[in-house]
Image 1 (cartoon, rainbow, N blue to C red):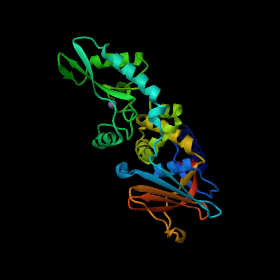
Image 2: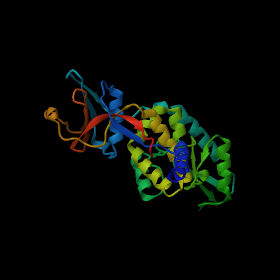
Image 3: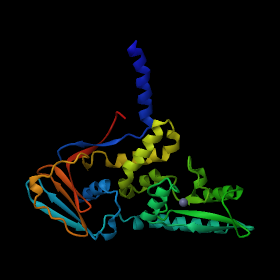
Image 4: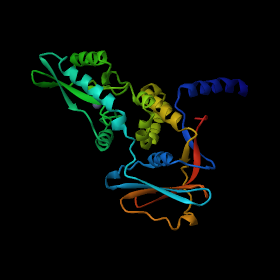
Length: 304
Ligand SMILES: [Zn+2]
């Protein structure tokens, strides 16, 4: 009897896991090596502060399995996405500006917001004006159009549908099509963050600090049966997971201060990250101090 009840339930869960985002879990595991690039990801995955204004350098220390110590210093951790995306940004601007002449009198189109920095985006997100922690505005790949009729701003109306159709005819994506959070003034160069990352995997680094926040929002909606509202988040999480699976991570349960780290010195206006491959721990500075974590490897959780 119980078995008969269990089998459909099992199918139900197996079916769900196909279309669902799976959770990425840092599984404690021994690491023999870690390259300098991985330090950036390890740090970004733990960084949710954005107090980087006063940070002038990042110090990465690696204690090798034989006890030898190597240090690298970087002035910033961004992937060079302004160069990486330069052609996309130019092409977006050309199409965005060509829309200006495609909205005819008595209407007039103006762009109120184009490129935003991370702080501006987070402020909008906190106020509830935007759903995204990081948006195409951050990359210079989105704009918000406002349409006026005889000098009067129109908040909505059929003219925005025309604007959307014209944007789409130019290969852009229109915010009026957004599910759950339609934004008829907004246009962007890519369908969603997942498609940007598919084309430019390096950009994923910028999303990593917000991964758990996206995850929380996503599972909140899944829990109430509204996964259709968060399909973009699901696709984004799946892309981020795909890129990091089997890569080194700092496992979330902090460990006590190891004796071998007693001589660890933190420099002002810098962030220190240390990987000790001999004793298998990672130190990540947070604020004026930091935490020690066991080393591990990212795995996908099957049993969501
Ligand atoms: Zn926008």
